[in-house]
Image 1 (tube, rainbow, N blue to C red):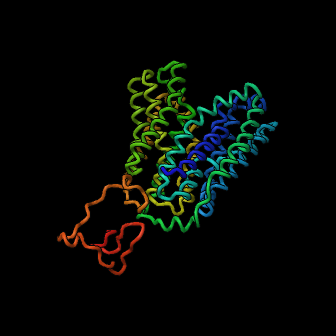
Image 2 (cartoon, helix red, strand yellow):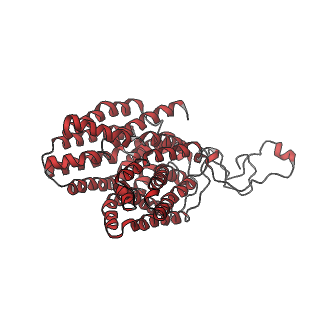
Image 3 (cartoon, helix red, strand yellow):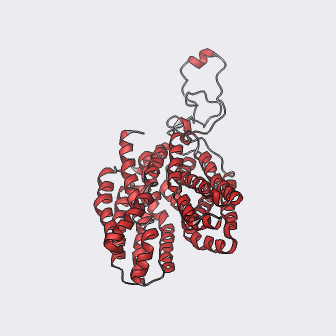
Length: 436
């Protein structure tokens, strides 16, 4: 990775870590004291939180289109302002109405500033070379809960939940905003023209519908496990302490899987890593169903590894299949169902656990396998020039001229319609130019 992009990845990775810690991961620690302080039920609190996730689904395409047109720096800066405003509103809330308003603002901030916007920002900057930077920021931001939960608990212990919210608001204003504003460059030239020059390979005609289903299924499984993993492991036979200890292995498993993607799987097309990731949850469910409580750690490690890879696939697979042109709008549309299913999963999977116990894993594993089957409808297309050679799918051997003298000779002027430039020429079958 180039030194310039390394700095950008470090900056966005750091600000993503703090943005996730101060928004999405906040309820895990502060839901109970906030609900008690405002005199509302935890169910109502999490209802407002789920509504904020649905708001992201509605705003995602519009935000993606803005990043396509102008780059993502200003969008990320705006997200820090909105998140700080939402946290300040939450700190001053006095009842259900104030709580609802705060989560509306926080939902807008999360739509502006979390992974999808960060991925689109990197794509606007680096085009088809964005796969490694996308993996890099997920490696750093994978520690958001590891940092956010203890820090939220510490702030709550010393300053109360209102002080904790104000502290996170200050982090967004004084740390994240200056980093995003001063250290993230604007795309060179026009974002649209730069993406268009890189070109796009032929994409599956049903690609967006298939990916929307795949990531929608993944969103349900992710939301269900995030809300109910310790309880699920207890129902499987693990003690409370063992269930919590096993669930804590998810974070390290996610980071380890992302390191594996960064070092090994980057040589393969993103479809390969996505298929591998989708197998992880069903495999984990099979172990837990067969062995019960003793397999709690195995379940958490396998599910965490798959979830870590799928976070990267959410950014890299649309890029590989469709190219960088219109990436922000396209991914905003593709991931909208995932935001809905992630918001609905805690309630629906909780009902399944009440009715079926660990048998609820049949539903989550079945969704993962259905998503894996849906990917069979897609075919990896040769990506445009600009993806590293190692990430290209294998292609048929190229034909060579029979005579060695012709092979050594410089190519003749291209026939009419032959295109040279950033991607191999496919306009004339049998063209002997060097690009073919």
